[in-house]
Structure formats: C-alpha cells, structure tokens
Length: 149
Image 1 (tube, rainbow, N blue to C red):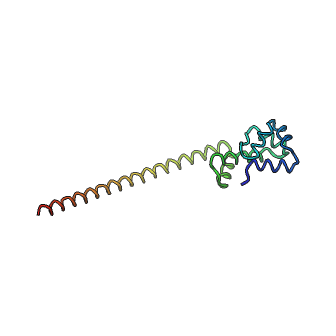
Image 2 (cartoon, rainbow, N blue to C red):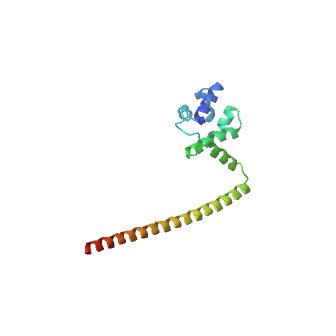
Image 3 (cartoon, helix red, strand yellow):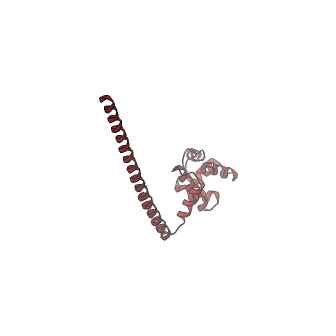
C-alpha cells in the first residue's frame, strides 16, 4: 500500500501544485507539509477536508487515506482488517451495538474455553507432578532396599 504522504505528494505534483501553494491552501507551513509527504509526520484529521478541497476530490476519499494511516500507526497493516474496520465505521449505531454484543459473547465464550483449557492443563500438570514424586519415592525405596541388603 502506498503511504498517505507519497499519495499526497504524487497528486500535488500531478495537479501542478507546489509545496508552497498547497501548504498555503492547507494553512500549514511548507516544512510541515514536506514532513507529511515524506512520512515523517501524520496527516492530522483537521486537514482532511482542506486537502480534499485542494485536490478537488470527495472528502470521503481523503478520509479513507487518513483512516488507513491511523490503522497502520496502530499496527493494523493487513488489507482485510482495513476493509473490515471501514465497513464497521459505515454501520448504523444499531448495527454497531449488535456487533458489539456478538463480540462480547464471543469473548466470554473464548474466556470460558480458555479457562477450561487452563484447568485441564493444571490438572495434567498436577498429575504429572504426582507421577514424578511417585517415581522418585519408588526409586528412593529401591535404593534403600538395595543398600539394606
């Protein structure tokens, strides 16, 4: 995926805009815009609308770039996750609430499954410890009996 900074730079140059003119349109310094284009600073949300206007494109498009930038910044880098999150953001509040309920139920189910696995692991570990102690005790008795003969 192309970075938002490089995307901005390519479009700016394609439109024949200079760094000075675009930075003026955005209300930021030339240096700040250069840092954004070079990926050294993130595009702030407050510039999404201004950038869309300067590039004569839908605000939703620039907002998607912004969102991808934020997702990458949060460590979410795969395309499927990006698409899923974009779909969630487009949901109605009622749809989001339903999704949240399903996720909570899934988490509770996972936790109970995880807890039962932990219990099984703990039981297995305890059984293994008992077996080792039993074998050690048996070995001690064997050595004691052998030494006594």
